[in-house]
Length: 338
Image 1: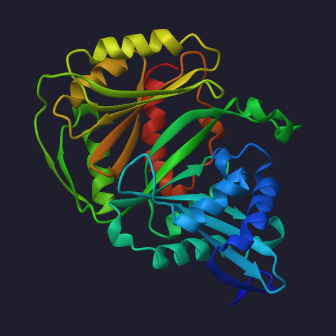
Image 2: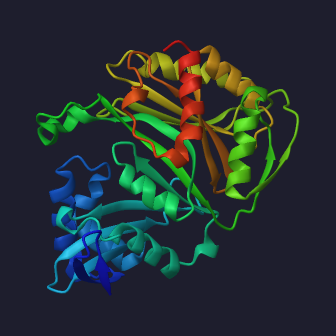
């Protein structure tokens, strides 16, 4: 196909699924664009990329120029932490080939190629440093639902940022597109965030049912994952029992004193005890950072806490179409007096 930029310059490209012969070019482009700071370090391994292409664990689309140069690439990961979802990953366009609408066409190609009816939703974690990817997502109908804040450290790869005035840690915007999960189930919504949560599901086009919260019963089902390199702890709470407060306290005591430590807790919104868990989190200094919606079997609220690290909202780039959701999250942060 022939693509044109705003200056009416032409670029001939073929968009197709990657094959084994593309692996060296894929890794070269990744290094050229991201140095060694790309979050998914497995993608620097030729053996790993060959394996995921062969097994279709990661579907990679490439835009190939007439002379064989890879102009850009994007991936769709069907083996995510949220079972039954599809995640857009590694959207990368060569600088000399930008402005030709390649990113949107890559994602459109993947969306048409993959069987969308296999997934509860398609989601992406957009870099807050890059409004270009946000624009592509917005153009494809993705809605912003929340944010994953302070999730990895820039200073662990400082050589890639020489001379740049960057914040200490990186932030991601969560965007989502409706898949097979047309109904989010029964939601137990904290009163103070009810309007935001309802607006998100209505924007996604998903139905839901509201019910009153119940006292916690049974045991807490929590998974805690700490990344010491990035000083980042992720907590998934599928069910919050009477011992949730102790589990949270123990986690904060174990990791909270580390330099630049941050926490993101995902609370299952389908859990009748979810509103009570939210109050516990907010009492401990967490603030509501939106939703990770339609995420497989569960609906998640995101709560963030950085004991000694601010969230520089003034430096987070957000497109106008996502400004309302972003403003709400910022307001939750500022209410905490952070």
